[in-house]
Image 1 (cartoon, rainbow, N blue to C red):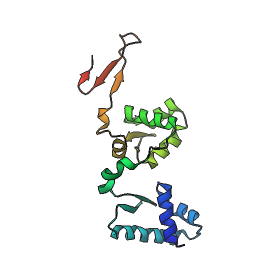
Image 2 (tube, one colour):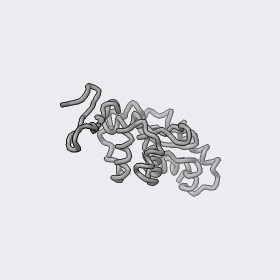
Image 3 (spheres, rainbow, N blue to C red):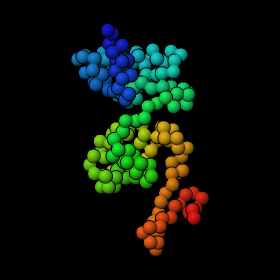
Image 4 (tube, rainbow, N blue to C red):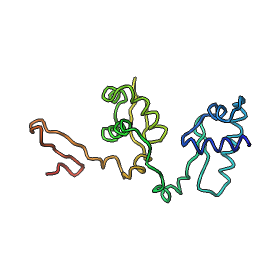
Length: 179
């Protein structure tokens, strides 16, 4: 088995970006520099191929994905994301409230949110950008594409009128309140 083949297999199976250090552990190598060199060669090899998949480097990590020009043709084959219910609720809250402060989300949903946000960020469903002592969280274009939302603004905002009784709700969209 070749190192490059093992790196390729690890990237394929993981479904997420892996650092050279993590790849070195996976393939049983102590030489991280050699793993980086092999991973970089793999990136170049995939660039020269006329295929539908690419190996890429982003920052200090490597990943494998369908090339953007092929995504629309194969999206329907993507299996349902295996996402715990609580993580899905967190994602829904982010989509509904965005942009939302990470500190506010933690206050509402608890400390487990940090784990969910790491996974959602790895899935490229959310972006977290520093703002003061916290981060602002928004959904991504990949989130919109995966959940077939043209724009997060399409999500209906619900507001409960202060003067209305507890049983009635006011549904508000860009077109104004519905009757």
